[in-house]
Amino acid sequence: RVVERTGGASLLANIALVKNNARVASQIAASLASMGGSQGFSTTASYSPETRTDQPLLVIGCAAIDITSRVDSNQSAESAIPEVDLLRQTKLAATSHPGTVFTSVGGVAQNIARAAHLLGANAVLVASLGQDAHGTVVAADLNRMGMDTRFLQYPGSGARTAIYNALHGPNGDLVAAVADMHINGLLSPQQIEEAFSSLRPRAVCVDANVSTPAIVTTLMQARESGACVVFEPTSVPKCTNVLSALLVIKHSHAVADVSSLVHMITPNSLELQRMSEAALELALVEGVPTAATVSEIAKFHYSLDASVIRNLLTLFPLFPTVVVKLGEQGAAVISPSPRNATRPIIRHIQPLKPSLVENSSGAGDSLVGAILAQLHTRSELVSPDGSLSLAPQELDTIVSRAQRVAIMAIESMHTVSDRLNPDALNKD
Image (tube, rainbow, N blue to C red):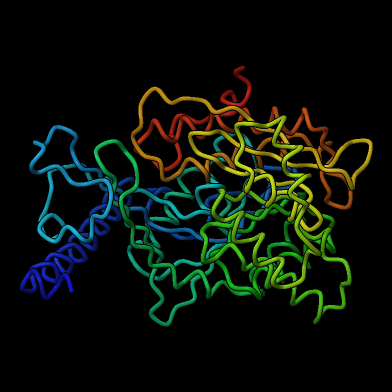
């Protein structure tokens, strides 16, 4: 419809944008190549396994190129881009707006691994890349950082490196985005098995971009090796992939109790709602809490929406620890009582305020990376079977510190702040 109403102008604009993106990628790749040595185009890892002796943190999922566009805030009222309903404003949608375009290495799993690495964890990324300029950029950048890239997979057959193309309004909030993520479904279970066999990770995070067989393999390998599993739901359409994996394991792998396979999930409120609904539909949980129970808990957490409390209680038998990303409202947390593991305790972690908003895209991933970095660097928090040995107060401290890392991402044009270092977790 937009093509028709603009006389084909929007189609030509989109074609021009694609060509420009390819040109930018080539320029980035050329710049990286000019660095020379181990920071050039080679996709062979410059990382040496002997440089780290601790058990690694394995992060499985999406690596991508992020193209982040932000409209200037000093436009006139007549030309300013609307924050909502963008695509229906045909005249505005079919033209250009002054602003800033920033290209960086991204993808959910890559962002999480990058944040954890910068915070001091031995993070290893397992992801699929295309044999193209974008894939070269991603691999070269990870090598430059000193990350282990041995388990990056190149499916071939014309597979394109994932791209996330986001448009932000003048205040930094996301207006719209296009995600080309087909390659993530090509990550093979064999690649994941090889990573587990070689690395014997103590903790693993998997995002919902990968296929159900890949998630099944991750959960089964973690179960056999006693690794802690954190699931990042990624988006509403993809967040139920882990439930499909649990169903496959329950029926095809003869694992009667799947409630101990995923130790933590990190949804936002919309993903939490969808996962709660789907878990009920698939009979992975037995029922919803009573209205009286929700109301009683809400008395102590008046700032939390009742639906968040209800959904947390619904999923608790399946996922014992949940950290809900609430954006400007902070975070909601549920975890077992130290005295009775079947009794949940819900808390509200108060929000932190950024000094400025540059880019909100990477805040959630940075928060998850910071949580994982803390679990990785404090081995006593993970039991031999992979379950978490965390008192509620300890978990709350971990999430509060992770919020500081998320704020640093919001204040940066980078999806993950380039100012991150291990000390960022130690500042109270």
